[in-house]
Length: 385
Image 1 (cartoon, one colour):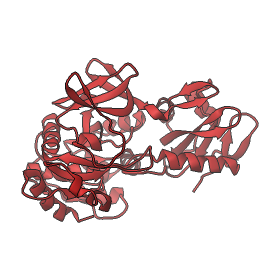
Image 2 (cartoon, helix red, strand yellow; image 1 turned 180 degrees about the horizontal axis):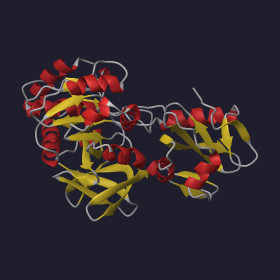
Image 3 (cartoon, helix red, strand yellow; image 1 turned 90 degrees about the horizontal axis):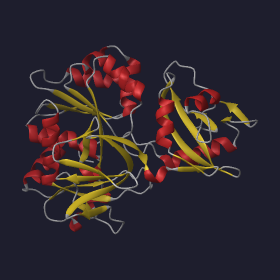
Image 4 (tube, helix red, strand yellow; image 1 turned 180 degrees about the vertical axis):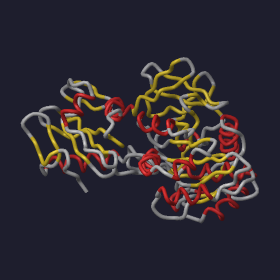
């Protein structure tokens, strides 16, 4: 992956049509010749649910529309801080917004994200224009746990975008109580990144739910399409092009709530369980920093609802009884609990559910974790690799 300063020059040329499309990965570069006219960037999706990423053509007009709508929703053009990898859309958009704003982004040094690295980068930012950055929930959790100067400096930002995965309610509340202007985002590579901020679509973006509550998105921010032979989720409804996402949602007026992945539904004892709903309930526990819920094959239940939690620094992890009570009990409550130091990711902020489900099954088979009933492993403190 080229360094950010080289990418800035390449993106500037791609966005104004004077240069070739920017391919952010070798896989993307391999299909550059298939890209339609007007393509500015070829990105590969994270494949967080399928395990296989797909090359996507993003047009210059769509990327400009996304950046312009972001500026309109926030405090106008400003300086951005790059804290995410640029081979994913959230990181790349930091550079694109910088190009179009005519500002130079501050880049956190390569390596593992730390509050200290964030503090140094924030100190290097300009004070005469709005300051912005994008984080994933895990990064925000680390900063809040560290406290001190990094939190103080985040207060100077006009907006801190948080996306890539759902952010726990208590984490958002803690950030806002600390005076940080956190803005939650929902979107994907196929929409040039976040296109719904704090539940409200950006200007020019429309949201539609079908009879099954599946989210559809439309607007100038839509990608040209995929550069492979996989399934095409772009559909035409009454003459307009929409992206048929894999997410279910609910609309309260113009405000969208994302309920979770349609294909993540677990079937346990004949009951359908939406992992995202259970995760939201468990995230309200004060001792939980991050949580994911997956299904583990079970001869009696079909799938055993399994919660994998990352405790807040210094906190005692919850036990299974507490977790089940927080989820409301009943057939949808977790029947197993594992505690980890971190969750496996595939792309910034996105939990790799395939890997997590496989490792959870292996841990439970090895007697780790805690199970409901008379089957107990090594207790909730047992951590997998």
